[in-house]
Length: 208
Ligand SMILES: C[S@@+](CC[C@H](N)C(=O)[O-])C[C@H]1O[C@@H](n2cnc3c(N)ncnc32)[C@H](O)[C@@H]1O
Image 1 (spheres, rainbow, N blue to C red):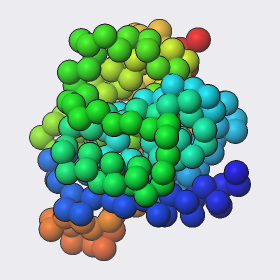
Image 2: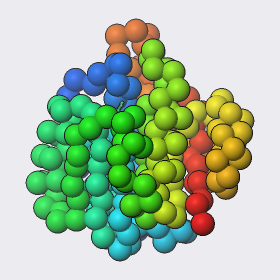
Image 3: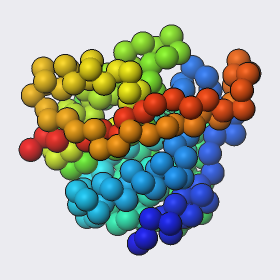
C-alpha cells in the first residue's frame, strides 16, 4: 500500500467528539499516523503478521492503520469509555477482523501479565502536561515491558535528553527516526490561536 493510500484511508477514522483536556485527547493526524505506520511497516517490518499493542489508543487511528497494514492482531488500550465507543464504531465501519480494544488505565498495565506478550508497541501517549507530569514515562516504561521487539512512540523534543537517560538506565537502544511539527488544533478554550505547533520526536526503542 502506498503512503498516500494509507493516509487517505486514515482520513475516514472518526475522532473525539468532545476531547477531554485532562486526558490530553489530541488525535494523531492522518498524515502523521500514516508516516509513522508506513515507516514501521516498510523500514522495520514490525507490523505485518505481528501482535501489536497501541497504548492510549483513543479513537484508534494508529490501531486501524496497523490492522490495515495486516498486523496479525492489534489491541488498543484506552481509559476513556467515550473514546472506546468511537474506536468500536470505527472498527465496524472498516470491517477489520484483526483488531480489538481493552478499556483500562495503561498506568496499571505493567503489574498485569502482559510482560513481553506483544511483538510491537505503538503509541502517541499523553505528554504529561495537564497535571499528570510523568505519565509519558509511565506509558513508555509500560510499553517497553510489554514489547518483545520494538516500541514506537511520540515524545516532545524538549524531553529527548531525559528519555535518552531513561533508555540508557533500562538498557534499551533508542533512535530518533524523525522530528515532527505536531499541529495541536485549538480544540480547547484556553488556546487563543487556531493551532499550536510543537516539536515532537518520533522514536524507535529496540529491545533485541
Ligand atoms: C494524545 S492522545 C492519542 C490518541 C490516539 N492514540 C491517537 O493517536 O489519536 C492520548 C490518549 O491517551 C488516553 N489516555 C490518557 N491517559 C490514559 C491512561 N492512564 N490510560 C489509558 N489511556 C489514557 C487519552 O484518553 C487519549 O485517547
